[in-house]
Amino acid sequence: MRAWQVERLGEPADVLTLAEVPDPRPGPGQVSVRVLAAAANFPDVLMCRGLYQVRPDLPFTPGVELCGEVLELGPDVTGVAVGDRVLGAPAGPGGAFAEIALMDVATTFPAPGSLDDAQAASLFVGYQTSWFALHRRTRIAAGDVLLVHAAAGGVGSSAVQLGKAAGATVIGVVGNAGKAEVARALGADVVVDRHEQDFVQVVKDVTDGRGADIVYDPVGGETYQRSTKCIAFEGRILVIGFAGGEIQSAPLNHALIKNYSVVGLHWGLYNQRDPALVRHCHDELTALAATGAVSPIVSERIGLADVPAGLQRLADGVTTGRVVMVSPG
Image 1 (tube, rainbow, N blue to C red):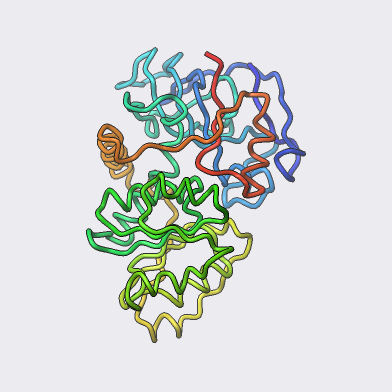
Image 2: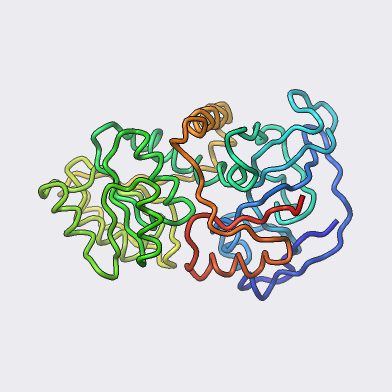
């Protein structure tokens, strides 16, 4: 089979090589799948650069989520059948940007019939991250004001939809007019182009000076620092990631004085610590997808040959929604 491999670290466009490798065979508790679609995520970019918290040995195949058709069952596998359409995480070191991938049954879930392959491939990492961030870590409630940074991006777009589904007022921050249209289509009540408006002032205007109850921040750096200026009393700032490239130090005296919380989320830990909750989250997302409350926005459907360029666009911050590699059939 063909698979993209990272043989040295650097920018995706520079370090990915398309290689012929043996078809993987499933071990105990695993299945092999034909990759129907694989969604690009920022962790893929960071792994190519060697900057992610998980650092696979070289060479490795990136791609952390997929939708696939089950080809073969490993020993001791139950609850999954050949031909099933599934989604979830590939079993490392083989990733999703390949023709065939392995998956651990523990992180393999039925793909919702309401979503096509590209959308189903986009439902795992980003939407699970946002569900755990909003429902588990910050206990979002109807009537909350949710400020979402990078609202047209992969995880930000999922936060907008899940925030609206929870009954929150959503303020989305984006970087240009095109991304503003995407955020509006996702359901954001107020959209801020950060190059044209000061999101701090917009939040204060919308809330009559009270501030946002929850700030969803996958950017970090100055974005985090400025968010502390518009967080509400007993508000929660969610630290999701650092796509802006700068890890901001939190001035804890400011959190004390303003009485807000800084809340971190490493969603991957739930797969180890509470897999039953991950499965419950998938059931919740499937139900929301069936009603149309969540529907991943796929802005680019690319072929296997276009993976390095697609990942590089994600790395350069010029994408909206999800970039997804789709099998030709």
